[in-house]
Length: 139
Image 1 (tube, rainbow, N blue to C red):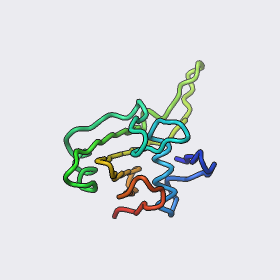
Image 2: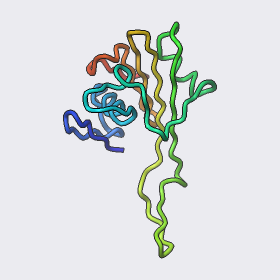
Image 3: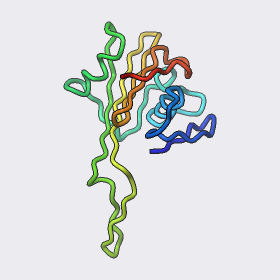
């Protein structure tokens, strides 16, 4: 999936991007709702409606282990399956309009914040989410 970072009008291909800062900021811009002056996990905590909040289980534990331990985590997830990637036209033809993907997003906030993303198998973390340049890849 290719995303644009609106503030920089920069295209980021999430499948091939090698810069953790660009990758993380593209996902932050995509996942959080706010105006152009707001930064997700700092000045807005509202996420796109199609994300589901996760409060326990495997996805929750995946994100929680990367975040500050002593603060309650917020974790959200979306998975677009292969079957959901097609549009059927009025003449019965099916057209692929998307590729399957999965995004896991987790954060903690207590005045300082930590933000984690996984897009498919690629993971990044920002242990000071007020900044846009402290993203690091997670192995």
